[in-house]
Image (tube, rainbow, N blue to C red; front, top):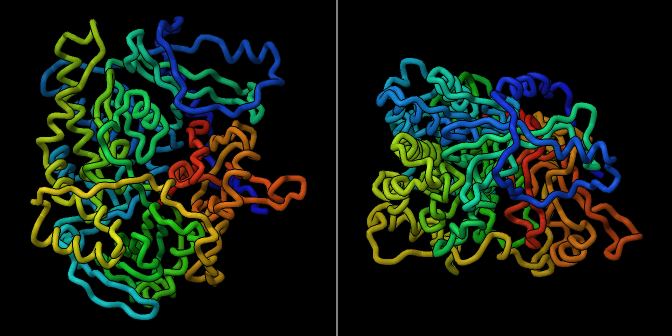
Length: 608
């Protein structure tokens, strides 16, 4: 049985976050708005006392803002900054509130990351006068195709040329952007989870409600219970990142994916290493394809040398793989033993680990961006340029475009009579360089769905990126979700992964400890399954424990139990969760719902 990870040395006191809650409040009154939870609660409240029920039904404190942004990543912060810039340019003041579920800004941010600064230059033209740190200009690019023992040099497609780009820690960039936003007057509050949207009587989004805090695992209020609070807003921007819980709800409620392809995803696993001077090559960017992944699995590795003797190393695995025996985490650990990677890491020290799902669907999987009262920005919509392996610049630009539309609508004087509709945002996106960039590469990722697999995709994507550049009358499509393409385990041979050596490769729990993840053991489980036994019956005989293989944090396991029909019971170690969202995306039975836990819970990423 896997232990439940809860490491106190990484924990952050939550008292300051709750103190902030009181500073947010300007008044208290009964709300006339409807609220709607976008997730199914599994908290057991049968034993809650009448007094406890009364506490949990008390009216929530209520506040107002012009714009509420849910999510403090690059897109949300770019939107907030742009709104305040427009305020300064036009002289009409607006209140902008940004809520982030991590205990501190950047703690839940994970990316490669090679930053293309195009959007950042537009947003903050003088950004290099006071840049985020570390910031390492790219000096060289390498592309390799790997076999188990050898590497073959490949020409890099134009999208992967990184001249003028920078290797960064995106979590540190987010901290830097948050400081810039606060300097302009944005109210930035970390440690606040949001699982509810407020709706007006016409069904338009009218704001958000933060989660209650201090609820026990059984669903009863604890001694430190505090009701969440409501923020009514003229515009609500969802910047939750890939596969956000609120975003799932509005896409379904307003049918925003009608006429669009299913989104397809990858999981990115990453470590940060400190290596000796002789093994470190400042500004070097290396990308690999092939081994350890089989030819019918999309993905590839990366290694970036940055900072002071730091190396980011990682693997991205497309979640549209069919074989349920695949473990992305173990593929990553195995990859580091290839000479391309081991020659750099062999005398180094791993100091950080993390994992996160990412959007890979491209333009044809971007949903309608607007809904009554708000919009989707950044990875909530899915603007990643897959051939570039970059999405920060497109996410930031989308936030800026939404901000410009929101500011115009709010200051037009017509928002009091009806819900705000940010039509300009959708239109301006289609006129922007983001659209042009995604349109040019729209066929690259789905070309790997052909019967030729990896090699067919390489051939077509090479032709498309070098010559066609998207100027063709056809568009390839993603025909199915990642969950639905998973096949039964008995169609494949189980994969025997090598044991970790503790130097280059590590076991799962050692890696999870490096994330600093923390959840209160006595709170409702945020990985919600309506019926654990029903899930076991539906999943285990067919997929033989796929959950404990696709999860990069040891959250799921099947424990031998002779009292159960399948001889095992399904156990959720939610304390281990690092908020990657892979379970919600990949589980074939589609009965695991990822919802935000208490504010401040989750990983405490460093240099990611």
